Amino acid sequence: MPLLLGCIADDFTGATDLAGMLVKGGMRTVQVIGVPDGPPPAADAIVVALKIRTAPTAEAVAEAVSAFDWLREAGAGKFFWKYCSTFDSTDQGNIGPVADALAQRTGAAMVPFCPAFPANQRSVFQGHLFVGSRLLSESGMENHPLTPMQDADLVRVLGRQTGHGVGLVPYAVVAQGPDAIRDAFTRLSDQGRRYAICDAVSEQHLVDLGAACDRMPLVTGGSGMAMGLPPLFRARGALDAATAADALPDVSGPGAVVSGSCSRQTLFQIGAAAQRMAHFALDPLDSESPEAAAAAALAWAADKPMPVLIAASAPPDRVQAIQARLGREAAGQFIEAALAEIAAGLVARGVRRLVVAGGETSGAVVQRLGVRQLRIGPEIDPGVPWTHAAGDGTRPDLLLALKSGNFGGRDFFANALAMTE
Image (cartoon, rainbow, N blue to C red; front, top):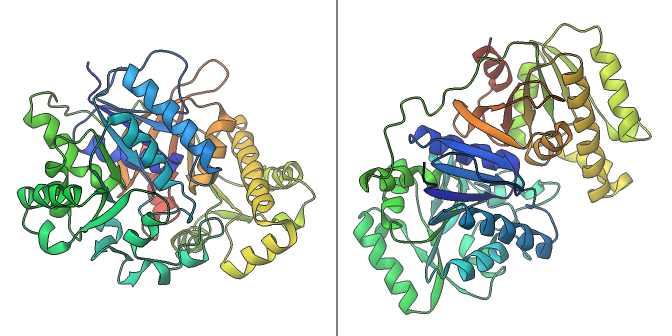
């Protein structure tokens, strides 16, 4: 099976989001955790999940380049750089610097950027990113504890991260279809622009953008931007009809939810789930160490009926208080370490179906569990599939749902677990 598409994602939930989109398009897709040491798994697409969204820029670039080199050696001819649908980053990066390195390696003269995902209320219009009807900078993301997004103008945001010219393919052009989009790319390139922010407010726009990128070696965006890629491979006769692309092995056992996301949507979901399952609120200021916090949570869970919900999620004012006491970076590290230890403890006690909310939390949990590869399965809500981690002698088979903080409906946690019962 030739590798058609090599993907690099800046966090673990984003990787499963992208992989799920490709599976929906009929591509047999495997997600690997970090850059593998050995040969690639058999798949139409491979997504390398990195934990570089908030890493120092030089480190993020080095890891992305390492992933690219492995994917190219595996035979990939087309590449996808996946970042969050809320364009999470800072003025220093890491979206632009990683794109710079990948563009140089692929020789791409024009690189499209589009984080739109209309099914999850992410749209780009006149270069501005909207979450629902609100500008990104008024959506709650301006209070993000690690990457506060206070500017919704993506041309401006990306322009601060790269030395390459950044242009716009506006709605009026995108609405005319692939040929018009290709012409716009050519015009921008002739003007000395290497990067193009692309408007998209509907799924058809994303499909047309994919078609316009048919000859581009590098595409970037949220998972929605990948919607138009499977049809390209199918039109070339390179993609077989994969009717069971999302099939996963059956895994039985108790379920649980672990959450570190502080997004508005996750807080809403926790409120709903707390009415249906036992809920433990983890507060870093109540424990002297991550290990002590994990021990307290696991002791609480010992006599509770499954599923249980253990969350370090908190509203902005509480997050600010915790960061003021511990420091922003130390607070994040505390929560990630505690929740990863809790997840490992739950698995040791028999949990086999685990839902994890939050990109950084998911990365910490997957690494703590020693998971190196995920087979992508059916979608729970737009952007969030179930995945299967095969046992390796030290760890049992697991079903994992790695949820971006902003994704999923009100009853996501309960619905996710119900799907696998």
